[in-house]
Image (cartoon, rainbow, N blue to C red; front, side):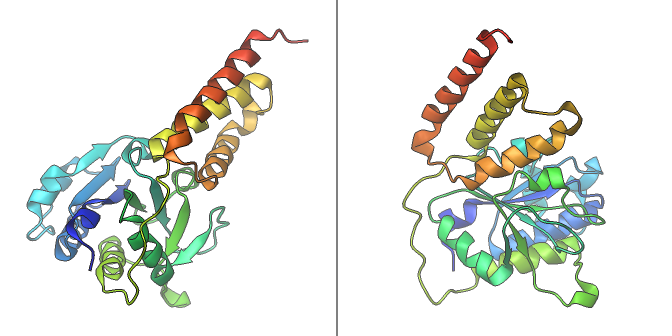
Length: 245
């Protein structure tokens, strides 16, 4: 069972959820398993805080933080994981099944904040949303009916996180940069690529998402963040200063 500090380091992030009842059901599941950190990004209905489905979790809904962008919702987290049914999609991040992924998450919660993202009911997380994730998580379901209700998906994931593991996980030895710090490095690098002429304006969005995924794969230590940002700023300043030939 996870200890209280570890439970508080897990952030459930619901992105563009359309039905406030599903937000309430997710909050109830969080309460069932001892989690309290709920964040929502662009909820379709602003009345989600009064959802009747949040039985016993009204206080959790009232405290939920709302954001306009995924980047802001995960900025203070060191590990960002997106959930997906993985059906008919070309995935660009590593994919783990829930049992394996839960073990990794439990280990990281001993020293890091972890964001677990769930997408809207009909289409799931978009490719842009997924570009903020270090890797993806899938709940094993039968191929004929792979999509789960949002509240059920949250409940299943959280249950697998809190159930007793036979092996005590070791804490992550190196503190990694937060998602906000990694996003700052991504912005500086992408801007440098734009100024240098590397980025095709017609494919800028897909290139930015590709750069974001690439930087996240580097697993940059928090202690190196200032150095990397300084390097990117110096390169960008130099590129801007150099006249075009």
